[in-house]
Length: 146
View 1 (cartoon, rainbow, N blue to C red):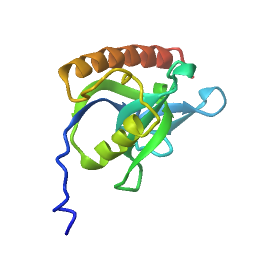
View 2: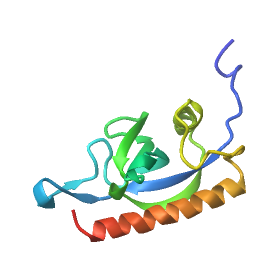
View 3: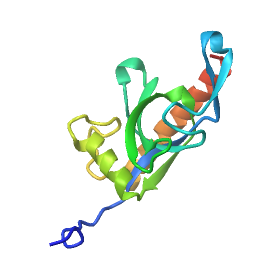
């Protein structure tokens, strides 16, 4: 029996998607500029699947391909270092596995308290509202400076 014989149909799910900023302030007072993040290149697409609500979601949990690797990893990053917030269906099997591990693996995942179908339009609409709040907050945070 091969992996193809036991393949399970993978349904796409809705997720908030963002990109890593091209440049960000770094060092004392933000005097230096760095490109991207340590683990993600500038412009990298990441799926935002969770966050730390006790900290006002200043830090979020993302799934994305790290620099110099084709593997998807789960990483905690400051939300202010993400831009271009939107909601999209996730089709990548590797990304879907990581997202499912976070959402249903005992760690929860925000916006999922009472959601039965993460592929439903109602879930998409809820994520759109959250993505818009993140977009507004991160733009204001970057405008205020480092």
